[in-house]
Image 1 (cartoon, helix red, strand yellow):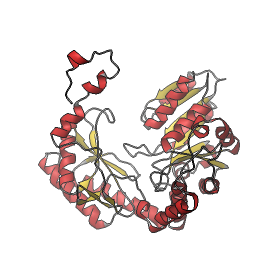
Image 2: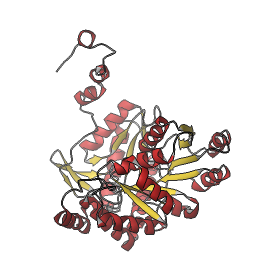
Image 3: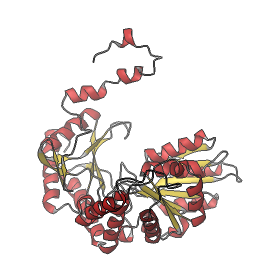
Image 4: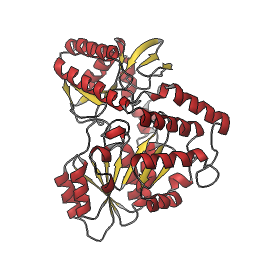
Length: 407
C-alpha cells in the first residue's frame, strides 16, 4: 500500500522511518535483491532455490553436518523421547539430561571446568556480558566484533557499565584504552576469535598479555572458529595454545554443530554465577531437545573425524589461491571464510545476481557492514564441498569478474 509520507505521517511518528525506508524495495524492483531467498531443499554443498539446484558457497555449515544422517537421526530420536520443546527455562522446568550431557561434553572438549548452554549464540553474548559487567565495570570490545557482542556491551552499558572500543586488531590501541582506566575497576575484554565478515583470526597471545597487564578478563567468541581452526577444530585458544590464559570461550550450535543454541565455557564458579544470575537463562526457554541431540551428534563426529577439519582447511585454501590466481582481491585469513572484494554497492548487487543466475549462491556484504567501497562477496566453505563444486565456483567468479571489469 502506497503512503504519502508528507501528508499521512510526520517525522515524529514512530513508524515514519519504516515507511521512509525504500532501499530494499528499489533493489527488489531491479531484480538484484540478495537476501531472504527461501531454500527449498538443503543437501549441504548444493541447495534448491527457486526450483533449481545451486552450489552453496555462503553457508556457515562448516563441516556439512546439517545433512549428516547421524545428526538428523539424533534429532528425530530426541523429539520422539522428549517432544519438540522444553516449555520452560533451565532455571525451572526446562533442564533435560541432554543439556547436562552436552555441557559436560563441551567443557571437556575445550578443556574448561564448566559450560552453560543458552538458547541461541546471540543470546549467549547478551547473557554473559551483561551479567558479568555491571555498574561501574568496563567492557572493552574490538571495533569489528559481531553484532551480538556489541548488543551485549550496550545492554551492560544500560546497566551503567562503561563500554569502550579499540581499533580492530590494534593491540597498541587496546593498551592505550586499558591504561587510561582506573586500576581498581573490573574489566572485560571481548573479541571474536574468527571475525565473521573478514574471516581473520585474532592474534590472541598479545591480547591476553595486555589484558593480564591490566588485570582484565577475556571473553573470546568462537562462533566461526570451533570446527574450523585449532587442533581438532577446538578453536582460537587451542590454535594459539593459550587455553589456560583464556578466561571464557563462547560459541554457537548454528554453524559447526548443525543446530540452534549457544554456550559459554569457563571456570566453574563463573559458570555457576551466570547460571543463577543471567536473565537470558532464567527468563528464556531452554534449547530444544532436537537441537541438543543434534549438537551432541555433531560433537561426536567432530571428535571421531578430525579429518573433516583438515578437508575444510584444504577447501578454503584452494579457494583463496584460486581467487588470487584469477586476479581477485581477497581478505587473507586462515579460516573457512574467503571474502572477495568487488567495490561499490551497486556492483556488489549486480555481481551477486550474476553469480546466482549462474548457479552459485554467496553472501553480498555492503556498507555499513563493511567499509565504504569495500562491498564484498563473502564466500564460505564446507568440508563436504568437492572439487567439482569448488571448480564451478571459480569458473563462475571468473566469468562474472571479467564481465564486470573486476578482473
